[in-house]
Length: 217
Ligand code: HEM
Ligand code: HEM
Image (tube, rainbow, N blue to C red; front, side, top):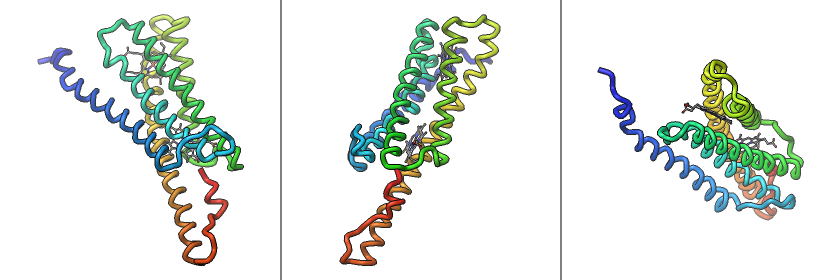
């Protein structure tokens, strides 16, 4: 016997609530980690390390939390009018894109101020791909489903493509964030290890970092 839509929604509220909780937790933990353990925030070229700190926090807010929420809008508010849901979906994605651009700016500015090359890592290449697919997705989504809004047959042909690339960029963002966190943990450990080695090699000498390692972000 086929189950009714009501039966299919069983457990939805719990799954949705758990997802929201984990998303908010990721934002809070990232904010606390950076604010408390990585020195806090600044937007000054004189403090490039602190300027960089905006990058992981704003990326988590935009490319993880807001992005995830924009995708869930159609499921969580399924009884609302479609046009209203579209407006919310695209507005959240636009806000996410603007915040992601500020997050990229923080990383690029901090690299430029510290004379570190840009786009040298797997993380940066994957991250750039994710943001570019995300931006293209917004433009194509806008033209197809909002304005001028293509005809019904083209819209239905485009929908699976829209959903596929929407999910692809999200998975890519999550992978990028995990690689970024790992990379940062390695940089921090390298700096600490270098300081420790210099300290035990010469107890009289003030500990110094290898400039190549300490300048990483
Ligand atoms: C999902 C979101 C993210 C995206 C799309 C992203 C994207 C990028 C891009 C494009 C760069 C290159 C900037 C440049 O070359 O000047 C970069 C740098 C960096 N990001 Fe992220 N990032 C994300 C999240 C994170 C997170 C959560 C961390 C954790 C700390 C992080 C850590 C870093 C580090 C350490 C660098 C500098 C080293 C490098 O270029 O690989 N990122 N990111
Ligand atoms: C960065 C931008 C965007 C991303 C990442 C994105 C992603 C997605 C994803 C993953 C879905 C599937 C949601 C689900 O199955 O529950 C979806 C559905 C949809 N999106 Fe987008 N989207 C973007 C922009 C837009 C824009 C600008 C519009 C224009 C109004 C739009 C209109 C739609 C529509 C109409 C659906 C179908 C909802 C349904 O009937 O289930 N999207 N989008």
